[in-house]
Amino acid sequence: MIKLDKSKTFLEKLENLDVRILYWLLVIFIAIPFIMPLGLPVPISTSTINAFQVVDSLKEGDVIMFSASTIASYPELGPSQVAIFKHCISKHTKVIMWARETGGEQLINTIIDDSKTWIENYGAEYGVDYVNMGFVPGGETAVASLATDTQNTYKADFFGTPVEQLPIMENIEGAKDFELIIFFEAAQSFLFWLRHWTSPFGVKLLICPTGMATTDIIPYYEAGQVAAYATGINGGAGWEFLLNAPGDALIGIDALSIAHLVVIVFVFLGNIIYLWRMKG
Amino acid sequence: MALVRRQIPILITALVGLIIVYEYFFVVSDYVSTTVNELKIFGTIIASFALFLGVVSSFRNNLHHFQRRTKDRWYFALWTIIVTIVSTAIGLIGSPNHPAYQWIFTNVLRTLWTTMVSTTGFFIASAAFRAFRVRTIDSALLLVAGLLITIRNTPVLVSYWGGFTSIGNWVMDVAASGAIRGIILGAAIGSIAIGLRTILGYERGYLGKTGEE
Image (cartoon, rainbow over all chains, first blue to last red; front, side, top):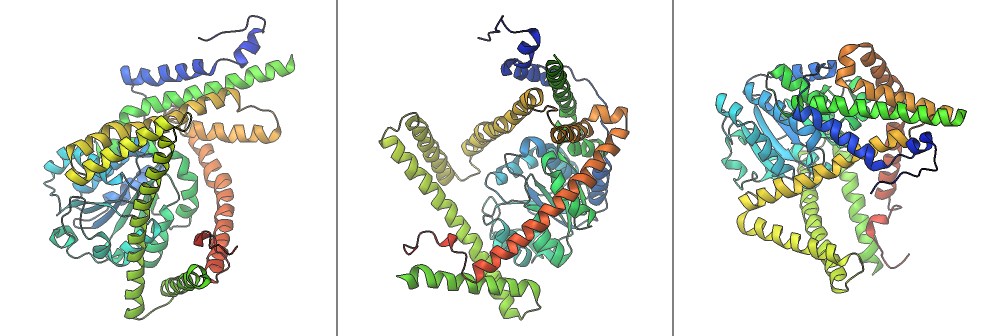
């Protein structure tokens, strides 16, 4: 039960507004675009266009290391993963998917399931054009080990098929056989790839971070160590638009706009009330 | 005992550390290269075992709280035990690709994670109204920078005036990047120091309690 103290002034009441009212306002505003799509404009950032071009310039048969996100960052990075996987399939590249953290191997199955139509349309085949290599523990050690001895680090795919029986893995020994790493994550673990794949072997690194993690990447991008980046749900929406494959990111972009607008209004409102009270 | 608990582990750490660093920075023979590859694979095997150890440790800890009926905790402990047993059993009997395992993953684990992450949005909304205030010059600067970045990431605003992107990008690429570069350099120097201390045997936290401290 939400109670307002009648002895307080209106401004005091507003300043100490029950937090549940704010929560409900946010829920209602975020829900509106999902019930009634608003069709707000979707600007595509230069970084997303650059990242899109990196994948678009791949040649048929190029091998890609697709490092899936964790479950925690999937709500934000899921749409980009699906869109980029579709893009890779459409370019007839070889996509080796793996998870650096537990649960990621199941997410890869979700990404593959969500891209089924594209897989069928482009005639891609499991084990030949793409593969789910599951989860390999060890963090940076695992990334380093994959760089020098991919076959022995993986041993088998997620379904237990030995590496020797997977045609996609036939000529892959290590990082030198890869053209591009596509890394989806919220944390600084992109540095593992930078240290063990990009610096020693020159493999290009494309990062899809959550919005929060973008600041960590920019210095490496400006230094030329990171080839490109596409941030969070904004990057996903841009990718879906450029690929002409509408998905969850384009649906969610209205909600993102509204949620940010609500936060901006809350900041202004909170400060106006605060300054007013200080003046009084 | 000091030999087994302290000196041998320190010696192994020093040797492994030196070989790995040497192989990374210098052109080495095939023999050294193969040894380093093997060591890296050892690393992933040890990490797998550590995961298993984590599950056993968590199980034991929760069993302890359940058996002692720890106040306000035992029912969570019981739930954790049930979930651990059920998911492990399904994973072992039917493989992680079993429909039941997939169902748990999609409808329980993923949904719970999504919910947990989404709650951050509510805290941000609450903080935006109650805490993000112009109290001092420092907080005013933080507020302005935060607002510019929020606006830069609001598609509808950016599409109406491209200037928001330019201003937001300046904050990200110049102001924030400069600060991050400082942090990166500081952390890198710290990592080198920690690495050297570990290889030289001065850093012993990873040995746990050796009984001699």
